[in-house]
Image 1 (cartoon, one colour):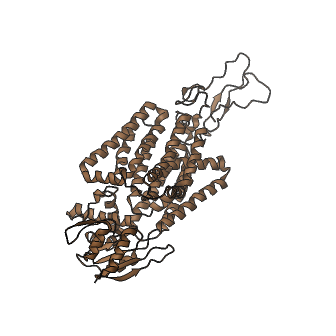
Image 2: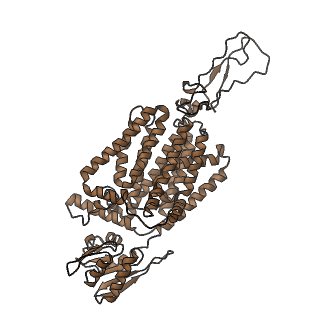
Length: 587
């Protein structure tokens, strides 16, 4: 591509005074003609003028720090620093076809998410009922019944309030619908920014790959703040790519969006540098100093906004950031388990991203009629592919460092979003130009689809249907009574409207600070045992699966105590074996 073709030679007899020959250059609009001098000029005729090299550079001069002697890019494809020819804009028919394909991808993603059914997950229940308390506190001054700002991994006044508003309008289904709309918007933004970087076909490939991954399917039907944070990060990344050609620092429009993403979920701070690097590498061919300066300015603006927000919010938020993100407690999950989960949840898309990175570094894909960003030299292309693909490794690296897979199935989706553009390049290269190998591309996409569907379904069925437990507990509620429940968030969410089911009445088996009759403060299993011995709780419900050490001590204390009786054993039907709940009630 990019080489100038000579006009076809006239095979007939030569004639003097021949009119200039008109021909159409490949890739130009059918109506655009270029008039050249005759191919067979007579001796002494003026030489044919030589067309300037794209961008005013010589064939041996690199465009933006690339290798000397590299093949000059085609000016019609936007692969150099020059703007594409106006006649290269895609036709209206092609644009409508691409939008129709994108709409079909979004519909498929929605169906894959909505096909999963289960009761509220404990995180969903916690955020939704805490949001309800936050709204009542903000509007009416009601007590919060818990210092959520001190231990939430996101600001409790952001997503929990949004989720609670949706829940008040339509219940759990409406709250989950907010996450679905956000994840669909993430896929659409991914398509838009990938199309801007690599072209229409690559954008569709990236969207169809990301839409069937486990995080996209799972988060689309989960009422947590992960979907909101990822949506805000996607908006920030889209602004970074779209503002790259501008001379003015329009990329600063992404600063408040990125800061809001971090406030929504503190772990999103890990991906702000990727947004800044994405802008710098996209704007690099148009001006290196400007690209670096604006990227640094973007990071500084985000840091300034977060610092100001923390100063206004108070020390509880800083304590929560340190406890949930910066200095999170170590777990006991083996590294082999985390590596296996990484491969199942994102290994296929990551492998395609590696293929796309290598292919993009070797050759710029031709996209006739595409308005794409400047590809620049090989060093810039390698850097762009490495940044986007390497971002998919951030979440696995953090989880391996912490030896825990808590929320790993959600966190991995942030990195896969940034790696998806390069995965789209890889899938497009596998399919080939003019769909030479569509069967291979379909087979690869089928693997990603099957893995995403199976893993998302297993995760969504990983917690028991809480309706039998909630129904059993509802008959033992009393105003002012105290309840020890292994996972109290779910009963609190479903029973919150009743006077005997206020959040302050519930205690979980994770932590306790109980003062016994002798005035001694006890924590851990001794604290639970002392509380049961003194008859502190009216109802005790456990299943021995979440906190087995505490549950064992509680079970022995209940069996030796004469103050409680085993009232009911709650079984959970379904394809997955969930441990039954044992409900003990005070006599």
